[in-house]
Length: 247
Image (cartoon, rainbow, N blue to C red; front, top):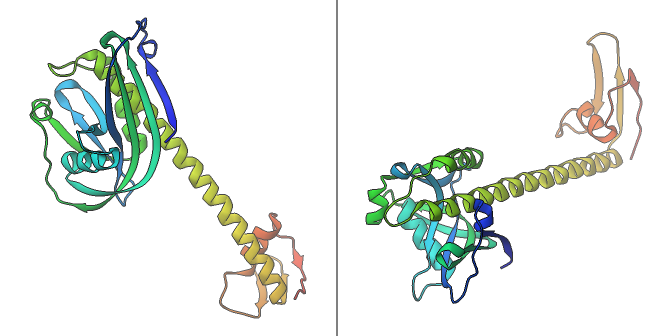
C-alpha cells in the first residue's frame, strides 16, 4: 500500500524533536459505509471529539482483520473491505512515537445492532453517528480548537488523530467527487454512442411547426423522444426544422 501522507509536530505548530529508538504502533482505520452513503463516526462527547472508526492492530492480527474487528466493536456492523486506500505515517516526536495506520473503505453487510465499547470509550461518553462525509468533515474541523484531553489520550495525541481524520475525509470526499465525474463523462459518452447507433439504424423525419405544435415520427417506439437524442448528439438548441434521413 502507498503512503498517503505524513504528519509531524510541525503540523500542530510545534518544533519537532529528534527521534531515536522510537516506539512503533500499527493501526487500522477508515470508512464504514452504509447503502445510503452515510459513514460511521464516533463522537466522544466528554472530549468534544469526532473521529473515524479504527484502532490498534493486536498481536496476531493483520490490518484487514483488525479493521473488521474495530468496525464490529465500534459500529456493531460486520463489514466487507472494498478498497485499501493506503498508509498514513505519524511522527509524534514529543512522545518519541511513530504510528502507521492502514486505511480502508468497507461496506456494511450486516448490522448486529450492538456495540462493544472499551472502558475508556464508555468513560468518554462515546456515541455512534451515521452522517454523510461532508457532514463528518465539518464536525471534525470545527472541534479541533476545542478538543479536551483525557487520562489515556492527552490533547497532544488527540490533535494528531483529529488532523489525520480531517485529511482522510478530505481525500475521501475529493476521490468520491472525481469518481462521480468520471462516471458522468462515461454516461455522456455512452449516450452519444447510443444516438449514433440509432441514427444509423433508423430513419427520422422531424418537422417543428409554429407555437407548441410538433409532429414527429420515429420508426421504433421503444426509445425516448427524438428531440432528446438530437440535443445530446448535436449539443445545441433545436432549430425550427430538421429533416434527417439516416441508416
